[in-house]
Image 1 (tube, one colour):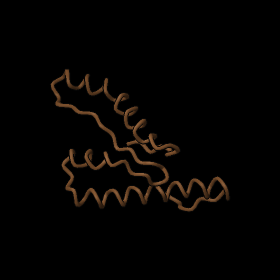
Image 2: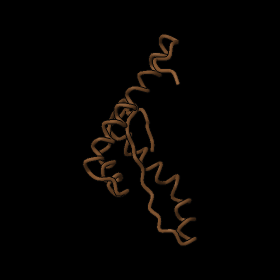
Image 3: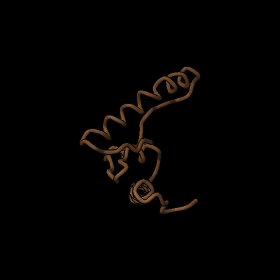
Amino acid sequence: MTVPFENTRWRLLEERQRKKERYAALADHLATRGYAMSVDAIAMGSLGAWDPENDKVLQSLGILKRYCEVMKRLMVSDSIRWSRDINVEHIMVHRQYED
């Protein structure tokens, strides 16, 4: 999972590729030990952008398409919520949400 600031159109694609490259060596290591491996990533922007490739990743994990839509809404909503909290804290020196 990666949540970069989506300042360009290609940012999510770049970050997805970076994550796949980062974990490729681990996947190769586990494959040599007999595990069936594949590496992919879920990339969404900190301001709520959703990469359509995420749907394929979620479905490859066996998550039903209908629930993928629910997950997408929840993940985007949380991303926006926490990004807003960071912004409020930065500007007002006050946290929006407390743990």
